Length: 132
Length: 479
Image (cartoon, rainbow over all chains, first blue to last red):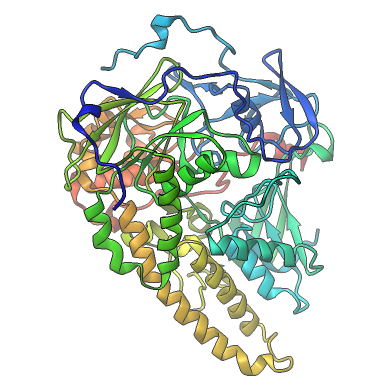
């Protein structure tokens, strides 16, 4: 079978994958025809969205993945994406606990996540969390 | 909205659609209820392409068949649709408690309400969800199911991340990788728990589904062309990152499912998608009182049905993934079969030449339905992980994500004798959170099985009561 064999060089403490991510590049797929442009307010900040997108999709495209804080204080984001896991709960237009994956964006929608947005992470924080 | 329908179909996936299409044109009042806002369930999702773009090549035959189905029944006057609505419970004489969610077009905040509707015949086609194998860090934002990543791309045209690490046992991994690459995203690597040898041993079970192998070949060739590293016989053992997912550690595993020390490698990626196969959404049929049975090769607990696909509750039928995970083709066949069973029962098939072809058609569908069993066991065996994978979950790993119950707590309680789903739930609160055990339930079942080797009937299935989905108390007040 044409699967690449794993050489010993990729093992051990070596790392693979692109470590320097270009966060300015758009996650929206270029070939897709989008609905009308609209603006969402997420924790007071404006983000771009298009009609027909779910809140989950709009937030993902804006680089937001922390949606809520669990009982023990850790942040959570979307798991199932289809309305089953209730991990993506956000406050939408003052109604708490709405599933971001099941709610479609609409004009002047106001979304509040439980996690402060656009936190600048320090280089130390960007490293591993010390589990290994 | 009527107060009563001849047939109510819960779920508008392939099974629900094919049932509706077969029932249409017989003068019946049909209502389809779906939780989402679109027709077609999880499989039939699509975005419109810009006019300048070429249509995408779709190797899955069932999808094009499904889209045709949506197209034909879309404007059928017999069929009524109810979207963004959840069935909270099914009561005596098939009375359904339905919750309509906030829909923007209905005005501001108070469009949420609850009402009752009765079905003479009820078809449950609630579909399936993904299964997981928990590891440290699977609760980090950026770790998601394969389906979540697919939905982002297929329904909304948004890539899950700039580069995505794909892991698990599910055949969806290949589909997802292919879709990401086709949309000019990057796949960091594909980490397949099954080794090539293990996959080859399952090959004889494919049988009548050989076109699926071609589909797989299309996906594989795309990965090879894009030089995606493929690791077979590897498992993700840890995800790390500060507040969000940043990297994952993978390790080689033995055929028995044990991690081989010293083979760990770390991958940095924008997102991690995982999937370990599927399990049926049996919460609603369980609440309705339908008998369930545990079939490992059908994905776990499924609804018990007879030849006409009627469940143990009178005039409550089950079609598609909830009678056993087997993919779209089986759902299509079973949708048709339930519809014909209902038409036969209520005597709506006397008109014209339909009378002659009818028994033959049922026989043909039953045969096709039976054919799916082999493919189903291929699909589900491919996705299964060995028991040792569950016993090896570290104590600090979160199992119940809603109630924050760790493997350590669960293990301790199982050892103390809380070794059924019901007693463990009472002892630890696992499965009592917002998802009501939909995510952790199948995992906990497998953990108990792995630790105690008890038989499935003794471990049991989580009880399900109305409302089976979360609902604001306000919805009751508005009604």
